[in-house]
Amino acid sequence: MINYTLTNGIRVFFTPDDRLRSATVGVWVAAGCKKENADNNGISHFIEHIVFKGSHKRTGFEIAEGMDEIGASVNAYTTKEYTFFYVRALDYRILTAADILFDMITSPRLDEKDIETEKGVIFEEIYMCEDDPSDVCYELNESRLFQGNSLSREILGSTDTVKNITCEKILSYMAENYVGENIIIGVSGSFDEKSMREKIEEFFSPLSAEGKKCDGETLPFNAGFALKQMPTEQTHIMLTFPGVPISHDELYALQICAFILGTGTSSMLNQRIREQLGLVYSIDCWLARYAKGGYTAVSMSLAPKSEEMAIKETVKIITGFSEAITERKVEIAKEKLISSLIMSREQPQSKFSAVGYNTLLLGRVVEDDEIIEEIKNVKIEDVKNAHKKYFTMDKMLFTAVGKVKSEEEYRKILSASGEDN
Image 1 (tube, rainbow, N blue to C red):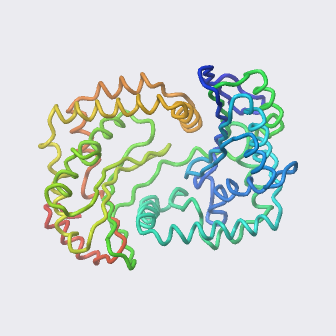
Image 2: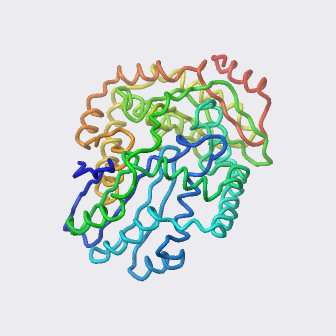
Image 3: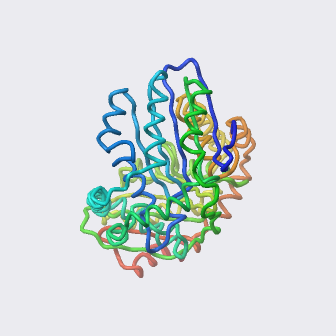
């Protein structure tokens, strides 16, 4: 899918579609918690913010107004493994939109006053997340789970690490990471390929080819308990089990396993814990996948009085999964996964995002037909084997946030469920 590579190693792909009257330009950068350390944690996310405050050619207001006056939609987000910037505009405006986007990424102004102002914005974002028990539970879970690895750190960083971010640190970090093979550029929709190529080369060819390479170590999985008291009405609980990275032979067998357990209204956990017992509003089972590892989690929020029964019933369903699944359940899960993939790909941005993401993290494009074929080939024995291999109670991380019980009490509940953690 990669159309060409700049001399400095930056890869570019085009997915033209003349049926559309708009186009999207995206820039993926391999910069996230994976590349950070204890001192600069949060800097990837900070850069995602600060580039919107102005370039050497435009002020922050001129960037915002410039996008508005051509009717463009621009945004960005940071994950633990990469940062993504994108803009969408009508086809006859996309070159102007790309010019603004590329300018702010490759030549940020980094005014000291802007940096201090943006710290205040990010502090508020941190406070907002710290007030949300579901966010706290998720972050606590990954912090304990990946302890000893850079992915254990939070995307936003802490107030202390953000407070210490300086212009010099930003420039140093960008010099190491906004380079060569760390960058993927994609353009999708209706656009002139020759003009867009010239625009890309104008801004990105001067960037260095050399920088900080970080393939990352295989992610650890730290089992046990992670508990945090918060003054909430509900307890937020996660039962987390080992998983697989984004490219793994057992990925779709495990995904089907998670679907049958806790995805959708017909899932085993939803039917028992919500519909029959009324213990939760929702209960879900889902996969988190990274380039070098992952996990599978069951998450729920519920009143403290419902905890014991919900945990016991959840463990009972998980441990009895292999005896309870049928060929029909597997086929339903496969059909749902395939239909979700196909329908999502009919949205113009879905395929585009998948190409950039997979190219950056896997080094190749995973075609939809390849995914569909792999899902179709999953057998019930594969699902049972995945369950047996990954859903092991002695390797589980139990995370709870709210008016939590003691670790000893949770151990007793789990032990009474038939499996001692």
